[in-house]
Length: 419
Image (cartoon, rainbow, N blue to C red; front, side, top):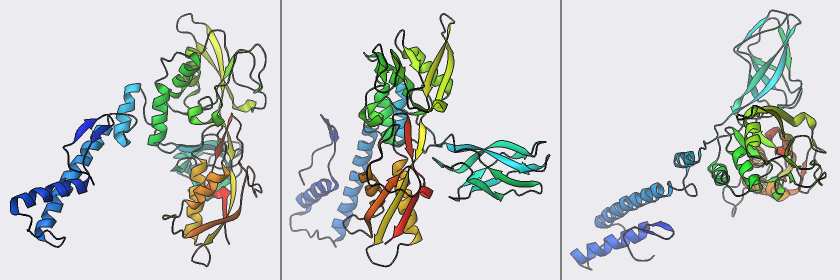
């Protein structure tokens, strides 16, 4: 238990006493005043009072420790961490909603007020604009926003149910393509600490590290393929300094970035301002989807010369998972237990960064994490467990993700069978 010493700042930070050390110190002082024979059993009024005093002192010490730790991005949490990283010009990323283009069909001139459409597969609800008028051709395309914050996905032709706002003259709705812009949850402390650590490389001794730091410091950016800290299978920056095409398909003397979040112009400007002289700012690479290439003209503030800057947006790869699970107490899984497993697996998949492999072992761990007490599990995850990039997966290995891709999870893509 150790003896009591006044709180002090040592080499490892603020050092405080435990509750038990404080209680022992107070009890010792009480006995020195009233004698060793005074009764201080757990049921005595005196001991109860001393325990209350010790708890108050312990709570004060723990608050002091929390306040002390808020001064460093390594130990700060919550609002304190948000304040500390502001010194590096960073802001915690706010949660966003997924958005998708949907086409409404019906009688020309029909006004749909506050409509809501539903995913026919997952049941997720999406809000239409406050007022939408169907065009002269009998259709109109508008942007629908998911009601739930975060990475709510919808594949092509899944948003087909009119949930509310049904109006005479509005007959159908659909989305012609997958969701192009997935929402993001509120940025976790761990992710914000990672961005802060990388941002300190802005005045770095290497241009590559400085460019990566500048991109990550761009408002709205949530990830990049080039930083081993954020994933990409531990690969270095996609910089080709040779005179020929490299093994990744990068052209000679080029840099290729895959960036999630941020406006196109802001990202392109960060790349232009920090890349090396005479470097091609490349987007399309051998094997990458050209549709994900973004090219933006950036004007040099000094010379006025306009330079095209290209980079890639990550291609989302939906991951399908098939889980067999058994309730330890017998019987079959409840709907709540199935939903919990689906949510846990989808949550793991949505934490993966650009280019990060989908780990078979981590998927099993995510499914098993629904057990609040691992030593006394209520649910057993059984073989086989399958992963894949298409419905009805049939493999039991890790899924490699290319450097321009990012895995995404959805509860609708996680099937759970009670065995």
